[in-house]
Image 1 (cartoon, rainbow, N blue to C red):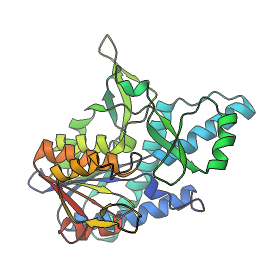
Image 2 (cartoon, rainbow, N blue to C red):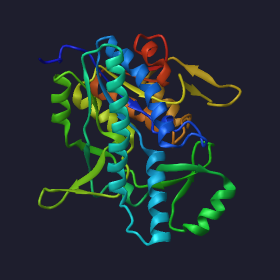
Image 3 (tube, one colour):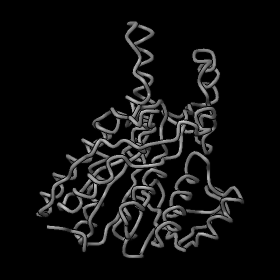
Image 4 (tube, rainbow, N blue to C red):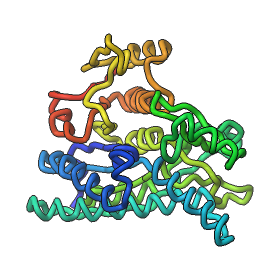
Length: 320
């Protein structure tokens, strides 16, 4: 039975939204956050939407990178390449979302299954991102901690991230193609909730023989999610993040909520440096790409407001 007649929504969950704070970084804490997010996503399934879920992996990649470095330093174990860490986080977070979704669907009496696709995303080997690392991963560090890190890890590239502290940055090439796109489409048609392109996908390039090879980088989750939404012909693209609305002058006394925003206004605000490079900017860019490429709307909101947002009662709507 084809489900193509149902409207399709692609929801991008932020990796940071699954790590509530420094006191809740355990895997069990993450699963609890996943369950809370999934409860809100299932509201859309009950509204008869087909749902595809993507997710970030910035903090989780950082945790595994550090574990690998400690294991190498202390026990001289082989390091885990970044591309394999991408795959590890995609499988682990995908498993949690899939299990939580399956349980919640059963609880709600919905006849659907959830499935995760370990997704490869092609990038350009000549992308300038490989020479200019820019994607924040891992935890936030204070200025005092930064001085220690510079001594311990002189090869790390560190940047200040949206006033929240300092983070390590790694190459973040632009996505070119979703390798498993046809498999995703088939699973949607088979009435599954699909988790795909987690963490932006596993970055791969095509070599001279046309075969795929993994590369050490992290693709921005929002850009990959936007591409996935366009290629699937999604009716709505939602970026789920830590705030209910996009704001101008964020966290300042003159902060102002934006409920509706055209692509042109979004571009104007981008030029005015209203959106943080490591936080809101890639979300806005991804929404613009989706709206311009599909003619449909994008929404930025928090997990708890997903149901209201899809009905037009919450969140920032970005349209043409």
